[in-house]
Amino acid sequence: MRKTVATLIAAAVMVAPFAHAQGTPITVQLTYDSSLLSSESGAKAVLKSIKKQATEACSYKKPVFGTPSFDRACRDALVEQAISEIRLAALEEGQATTYVFASLD
Image (cartoon, rainbow, N blue to C red; front, side, top):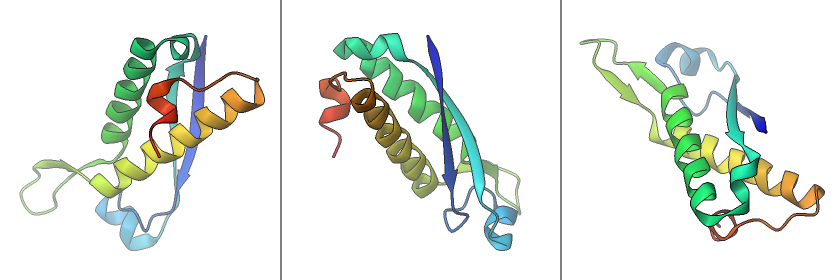
């Protein structure tokens, strides 16, 4: 079963140079397979997928040369918020969070 984690990041975390300048909030939909959270290897795969999706969401081209880059603070904030939402969902469903997510404090 695939789930979506909607994360709203204030534009103080730069996703794109223009979004940062305008102070526009950014909403990102991160998806993951909740059935993978029952095992440590599955949870690691979910974490890797979330990091990849967050990196893509926080990517932009540098204005002068157009080279691709991404904002690490944006990525880290998205990952942290997604993990918090996954933990909360597991708690609400009465499931224990796997070691991978429980150890990320």
